Figure 1 (cartoon, rainbow, N blue to C red):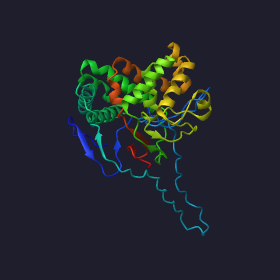
Figure 2: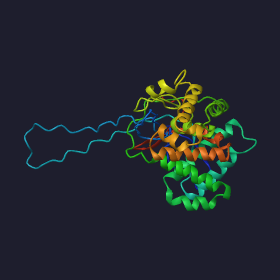
Figure 3: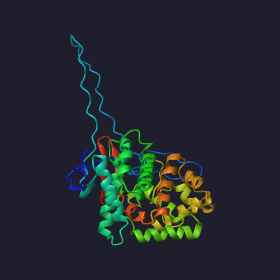
Figure 4: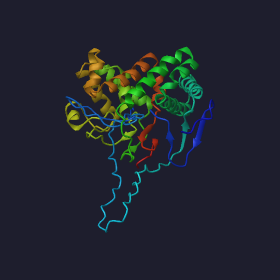
Length: 338
């Protein structure tokens, strides 16, 4: 994968497909992105993202490789081995400007420090948060697939950022667990601009005030499921909307429009509260939301980071949609699929 030239930050305009070292999630969502039922949910390909990646929105079908037809001609004097069929290729995606993860532990450590400090800066601007939130994401995605770099990266970080790194990497690796078969087609999604960060934060807090589910968990679910609502599309189970509800669950817990962020976040709070989240049993509530241990661990890791420092939300809000393919991870920018 292209690096950042060691310790320096790299930002480049890429005319075609951007293949970045990977984590989900989300998503995430993700990567990546499945959704709940009243009893259990079938899990699918990538979490979010990172994940949703990500994404647990469900895998597109894998195109079958062409198969040679049996010959009807007279056999040749010596057997001839047919050529191997060409593997399906992932189509190009036109990209704007995106950060590139460093290709060594020292470079990743520097990127993490720069991104985390910029996200928490008192004078952060919307532009800097978008830039450094994305840099933070790609740095952690790169580290997720290089566990052999963990100790060296951690040693190069300040003490206060080591637990932040550990939690983000743990979440990313958990979300990547179901990714066994990288895809050969890009998903039939639309990637849209999410509702403003302050607006979403108000919805999470309304969910907490009304149903007792901590706002940080609602934000972590939204991040993991659809990258804060960036992903529009159906999962393999037919789930939809920014919090990924299947129709039967929405009929019981939803009110209003399944695609509306306010209505979907309140429905998620209602659902989680009904399954223990309102009385503090978030592990059970998350397991009911998506009954796999990796999902519970990943969402919990993100939520606990938000609880330890709410400023982390400013970075997570800007995490983008990445899709794991046979050719590497593809960044699906806002506007993809329109």
